[in-house]
Image 1 (cartoon, rainbow, N blue to C red):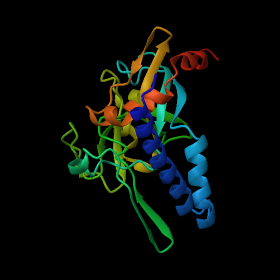
Image 2 (image 1 turned 135 degrees about the vertical axis):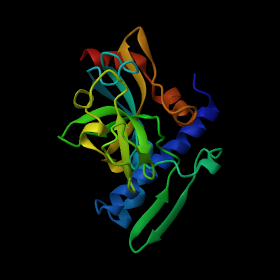
Image 3 (image 1 turned 180 degrees about the horizontal axis):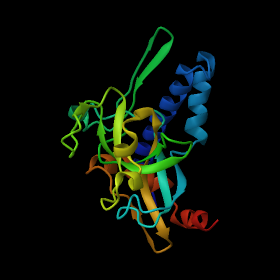
Image 4 (image 1 turned 180 degrees about the vertical axis):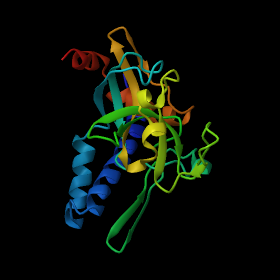
Length: 231
């Protein structure tokens, strides 16, 4: 049984998501200002914050061994954490319009250490990797011949969890370099390998866990995930 307080927090998260998604569509010209409010209401009333994704391979072992069905929390406009000093506020809303563009600061959405679903920069597929660094981080290679560099604005670095794999096998940023933050589709919050082998995914310390707790409480359906994995 989900408590009333959990539903209230979930509703606030869903409103945040609906605003982010609506403004994202508005800013790229998919909808106009008149359609914006309708889109926000529709997302809030009908949309879900998660979706399931089936993965395979050993790139994320031991975190996600032998693949499985994953529950992914949608991140329509993923941004790195800039508001550490405000982390005790679960939600932060700032909305402004400048030269026809709507600017919205969402709740803190993505954290270094999160397992994310990201677009594969080399093809049209998506891959599951761990977010290892975001803009401003200095990247230093173990190879002394390679010069250190700093990730540019809106760039991130993703890595495989399986340290036994070589870069070409792991297919992460050591192979294809930095990835745009906008290529992050969502954060993996739950993994199901079988009906009796499932649980939350280990993400960044307490930060992501706190942000996803209420979403899991409302939207997690292990039985449905198990059915999806068989279909």
